[in-house]
Length: 471
Image 1 (cartoon, rainbow, N blue to C red):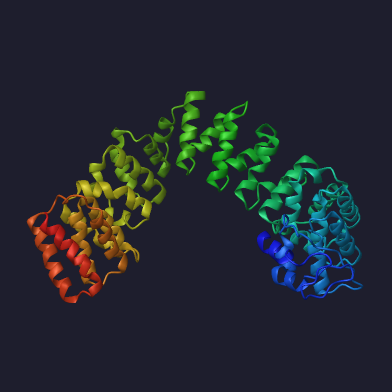
Image 2: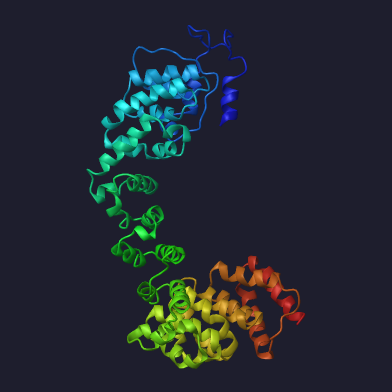
């Protein structure tokens, strides 16, 4: 951007030198047409660090689209004299939207320019419509991060007026502000009138809901606020708040840890299990073992070999949450029991379950039973064939090739061919596991594929044939 600006404004375009353009009364070439190609009001709206070089002031009797754009550009000139000239012009000929450039000058590094903007803000910010406030949220946040702005009366007026406006809103209207702007207002309110405290825990953004504890400290929260945070719908909020409690001076009360011990998040349950054992000597396993209903299956967090039968029942329970917990435990302590669970149903649940089961299925189930599971994969999603290929690849590369060639004969999508090609490409030595029956199956499919395949598959066929010859 700056390179184009310098190229645009330097060269023959200097004071008193003509390059064929009309000169102004102060002796410099007017670059409006070039600026119009580079900039617009919209492009400048959220641009706060832009600087314009070698730009001289002009005076207009009335405001129009062209002169307003020039005034916006002049207000970000590298020359303090030029910035002041156009800032005064924007103030004297103000129209809605110009507050964007006036507010920006609160961060000006020249005290005189800064003071002009400051005076206007003190007098006029509270008169701006709410639409102007919403349009300038990013700019106000930008100013809030500038050290030179913080002590100005104008910025103090902005903060005062924003809190006053917030008190006239309901939660729905307040929620229309951007996420970061709401966060700014929450922190501002907690430092002053605390009016917005009642809305923080109902904010749509998880990060904003944590502000209450971060700003005030957990010891300043009410009992209802603590419970609401621990029961927040976001795992992120619950987990972060739990750790805040743990590192606080008071620690986490036992009753709150017991609540977390039944959380749907495994990391929070493990957190509670650890602190209940360390700080209160409570064995949560014994609590789980006495629970009624599906919560009983939380004992799978401990993955004890004596509970294998429980894990099998839980995996087949039909409840996805408890099924996954029990599957993880079963695959950890007794993966050979994979044949005891309802694989056809479980494999259709989600990708996480399938990835958990694939290694054990390939290792402990007979090949015939593995092939019987193909329907559970292929009939599940458009990419079910890719899932089944992942399973047979756990058995051997030859099984992947055999199944993949079968898919190609039946008009499988390109990703199947790409999968086979990629695996063959990275084979360093001839893979093991090629039985006579499997070889005959692959050779038969290759023969049929040659008769029907397009030229694009000729290289794949040659690669598989070469792999067969060297095995």
